[in-house]
Structure formats: C-alpha cells, structure tokens
Length: 139
Image (cartoon, rainbow, N blue to C red):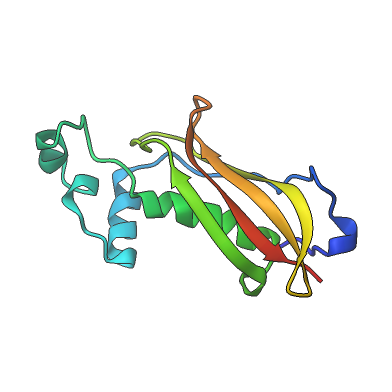
C-alpha cells in the first residue's frame, strides 16, 4: 500500500494500475463461492448459451471488487468514504482487465479532507467495462 496524504496528492495524479490475469472459469467459480452469487449465467455454459450468450461471463460485482482492490491498495479501506460504479459492458472469459484511477478533485466534506477519484476497468482491447468514482479521506 502506498502511503498517501493530502499535501502530496495533486489533481491529475494516477493510482498505480492493477492488471489482472485473464478471466477464467476457475476465477468465476471461486468468486461465486466467496460471494454467494451462484447465478448460473456466470458458471453454467449451457445456461449462458440458452440465454443467448456465447459463454459464461464475469459477475459485475467481481469487476467492482477488482476496483475496490485498486483503491485499497492505494489507501486503507478505513479511509474509503464512498464507492459508486456503472457497469458498461460484459467481461468475458479471456479478458485481461486493467483497473486504473485518477484524482479529479480535492475537497473538504464535513471537516474531513478528501479526494474524489475516477476509477475504471478496461479490457485488453481498451473497452471500458466498469466506470465510477470513489471518495477517499486523506490525512
């Protein structure tokens, strides 16, 4: 984890990128077990095909978890004040996801010094799959 403080952070600074291994069935099965989300569209090929998909695909919340990992690798979880995302596309098997973030604003909220960070995950083709923002309190 990088030590961060308000005086050393500037608008435009980027968080260290998080690049993940290709999405595979094992990852989806492990996430299903860990999260309790066993929806068959994420783990059952026949079900996914019957729903018109070519194969299973990643849970949206798995992608959000990766962005959360990006944020908590930069600042402790206890400093995270808000985290919102918009799901913009499906993360398919084989996608190599990269998570990134950029400081877009420094502000005070209820006497607490915070930064607003835009976050996004993109696949190896440069397609955004999740975009959002977080509010992080900094000392």
